[in-house]
Image (cartoon, rainbow, N blue to C red):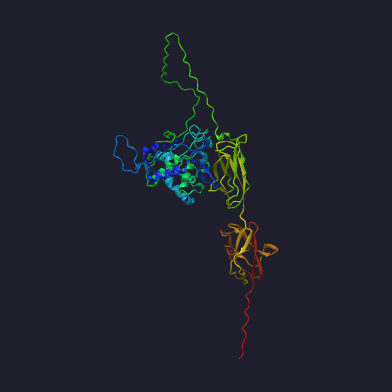
Length: 574
């Protein structure tokens, strides 16, 4: 796939800022492959290549073709010429109303859910322009769904990536190969995990501009990228379609839209015309497979071809058929040579809730003979809804290209608050092979030490209330133990931890006596401050015991005693 970046200059040169960005992008992307580092961030690197082994499933679009038209110069409108003039800058800046609304709503949503991403809506507009010409000039209904499907070419390896069917034709109508779908051109395997419901209708439809725009925004904001940073912006765009020419084209439109756009009616947007694959991009539905039915008899007989003139010698000759050319052997792609996955030294996957796992899942792709295979895409998926663990960056799916040793290492796992076991499944993208499952465990946050934050004695008179509230600090291995579950109980004695039926007590919201407080949690500083304590009419020394997950225990003395009677002042006699 070669984008005609140079040949498009006659459509309009880039502004200085765009040219600078493009040059910077080219300098930073001499080998524009996208891979994933140990922190889960996709980066360009010399060890990667564009669409390794022809399989583009690691990108949003499968590296499908795109429109290469560049924005026009912001110069005065030229004098009229004979014929139909090209679209002016003002027309090119127009974005169909529904499409524009979808981009802005998606950016607003991301500014709330992922504020650190700094996603500009103009970036979604730039990608939408390059991928589908703003949904074919805004050819959408009132709900934002394309009136006719927008489909990329069949990804059968014939000039494009080779991606076998992953959705049974549910999204793209093709049960043999995948095709990019919708105004933002997601391939089905990516939409399966990246799809969003942007218009709140309960469906995730890649053909709906609201759903597709929100999905594109989330896709660009994964891995904790900050799109106000040029390097992160470049990485995010390259992850969408892994081509330096694509990056430069998107950056050009981003800069253009940032200088000003306006709304135009749906269906009246300016359509681009130049594609990276040389087509017009007009394919909207799958081509039906030819059926073996008998063709109908034409109303007008086909003309009979003239007989060849006999040679001067008299007799007739039979034309000699041209022998077919030799069938050239095809070289299997690296992915096609993979026979199985092997573990590559993954250690025990355990972590405390909220912490990052110390080990990362690592696998190796091998041939049947056990030889490592490089440049193969491996997908890591956190399976099931019983966990809130994610990879670094907040995603539950990550695709990594194997290195020269055939090894792919998943981004670091980050434990959520849900405890228990979950599965990380590894599979080879583009192959139906048995994957490897890894069990990971999340244990509850814990503390091993509790101490009071004050040394003030806790005393009260019968029927009164304690002046000081009990506050403790929890630590684990000397570090602050935050969000640790705790229980506080007024117990009968040091040897009897059952709840006391007399002495000090807490009050619930209705003012009732409570002597056990469950579901307590330390704060971000490991501190836990208990509610106010009250005393009944019983005097004596009582015990308050606080325990946490992990075994930390602290017993606090509470004294209830009558107020001391002041001694009478001595009398004096004169």
